[in-house]
Length: 83
Image 1 (cartoon, rainbow, N blue to C red):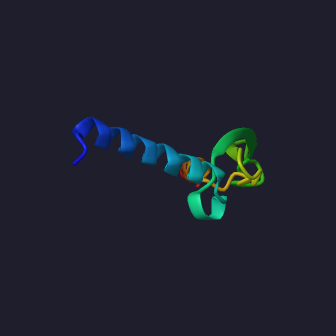
Image 2: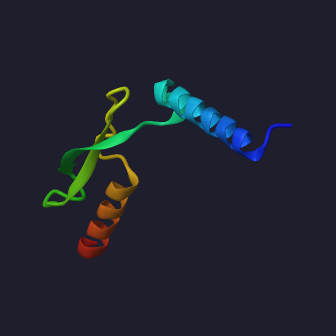
């Protein structure tokens, strides 16, 4: 039976292999790697001046166009303030 240090090293190697597989795998299976891309008008109302974050995936180039949790919070806050 391998001693604990050998088992630990094998476990680290497996984690590294899995991380590499995830990083190279398709986003639909492993999720996007979102990066901030700027902002867009929140569109809460005709007079809205709110900005929501827009993200782009560094792996596949897909864009969320401001459809994310932080943008939802901005829109909700705007609605409460101007409701």
